[in-house]
Image (cartoon, rainbow, N blue to C red; front, side):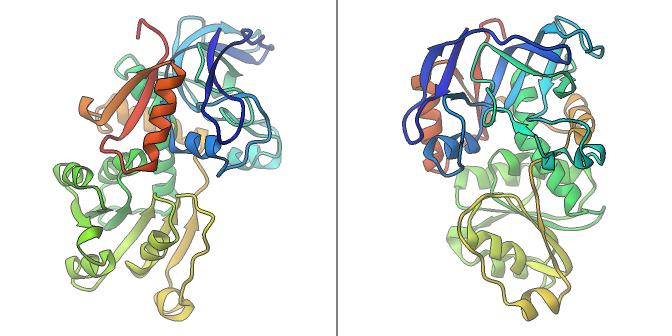
Length: 346
């Protein structure tokens, strides 16, 4: 089968012909229809996030058709449309039993610790395959499995309540989903902090208050917009020490800052004035949970979570096109996500 693989950190991905994976009794083989290109994939290629196993096929935002099922798999059959949970996990350790599989002691992230979806086929444990309703395209089903799922997990971790306000720092794939999901959870006012004018305009069309960080201190802008109160919840989706600190500083009393973006930088906080005195919380967000996916899939099926055509870009399973899409993350891209259309009949 064809695949686009990372063979050397810091170098472009390469096309390769590799063997079709053999499945075990608890596995499924999926014919990949679509695979999203995530910023994390650029981190792996660049060496910002360490990869121990090379060569490896990247790609953890995956949707397609069931090709084969192992003897123990009963919930899907060949031909079913599915989307894929990003983490292969044991299902039996203390964390998996508690539904916290992102801390599984033997967990393997698809597209990092094991081969991912930049390929024509992928083998995953059967428990990782979730039925994708006909109302959801493969392209949207794929990108939901990372950006949308992580946005929902962040909102859950932040304990967003109906009527509360929220500031979203960054309006890429996660921010675009977070805004719609926050609205679905009956939040009140939404503020989106960005430097990209196109994205700010998109956020405004979706009902948010745009906060242009190029026009002044976003903390001051949020304080002005909230009459000095601050927001109840903030999501940091960029991965910058500066915006992480701003996500804390913009909070009002009893606020919760959920930090999602990745950075190697340290962040400084004034403990008394910015944390203790307001009893605010700083919450780490690690990916998402399989248990959250049915709700997310229903949000998309019912049209609550939408990705209009102009928010996505498409490429083929071609190393040159994929590398160019990864290169584009070095700048602020105008669209929400780039998706590889792997199968020609998508």
